[in-house]
Length: 233
Length: 242
Length: 51
Image 1 (cartoon, rainbow over the protein chains, first blue to last red):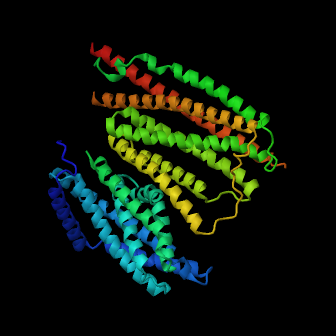
Image 2: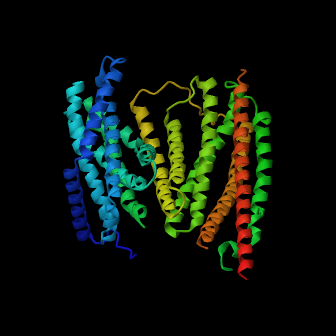
């Protein structure tokens, strides 16, 4: 098989990414299996958190950043696994790979699809946190930390989902492989969300925001370059 | 028929090579000397007593664990650039070795921490980073065993080997900042290296060297084993064609 | 301070683990060599048959 230019042809890359993204959106709109599944899972976990922590703390608000991000990560993992499983179940990825598509476009479209779906999840999650736990999340720095966290999750989650897509026990393998790599991200987002909720000054939170930006840039680059290695035949 | 790889390779490769014999002897000697120095030669630490002698085992084991993962990282890069199977063999051998030495280091650390700190494990930056390193490479081995053998596994695990290694400094940075911004546990730090008597330091250095030589020996042995496995697999698939 | 028992446990554990690992490796290596010999034997007999 001829080697395709990897991320060389920029207009073509953008166009292909856009087409693949539209395809993913269409599939999701028709099947409605990935995002609704994540959302329902997320609500269930919030209910469980509410009861399990209620017994030992009088003030669940203190745990809100942790609850928010644990629910987010696990629901997000569920959706992430689905995005590639769907492709293998219908063998559509093989079809895409037969067409002259730049693997970089596959990465970008999958990453953006993941980013959009976890952003929807996150908006809903934030709303539910306010409803269930009565916390005030309407802070400017929360609005900075949340998208950065989602972007980092999508950036590094996508190649890992692609890695596990054809394997046995993929549902279990994906979190086992991904969670150690996500740990710095989780620490940074939980910390910055907590600090943002405490209304701290920019200079106190800037360390974590810069860390998040660095993490996102680093893993976007590595994933972008590494994705070709993962999907190559 | 005569061109089959298993027939064309010389029989000599089956026998242990000189490097294996040399490292075997060297590591036996070095480890014996190291343990003598650690257990008898080095003076008893005034505050920590006998438990301090775990230090001569704990630090070298973690050092070898970290070294092994550096080797995984380098050989993963080597594999991706050259696509030579030997890099992959080195990577998987070293990952296994790293997990074993890291497990040893962590367990020894926990045994030490119990009498000295009063806790088994501390999620301080070093402790957390070590644990994450361990987890990453346990999952690396799991990935390899689940996906099976073949070039796809080699590529996937090379990617994981690189990402997992790059992640380590990030984990360390994040946990350190986390602790500075949150109340840190009041624990006596183990920075006793500064005021260490010369005998202790010497014993420590010898143990460090001994463990490194031992790692080299195990690596050579392990890589040879993987090469044999590789040839058995090639031979099997060739036989299957008949 | 009499906590040398902890050091003893740690060192005993070290040796137990390393020896177990070497034994496992040696066993696997001899097993693999056996298989390789077997396959080579099969191949040579096949060779002679063909000739």
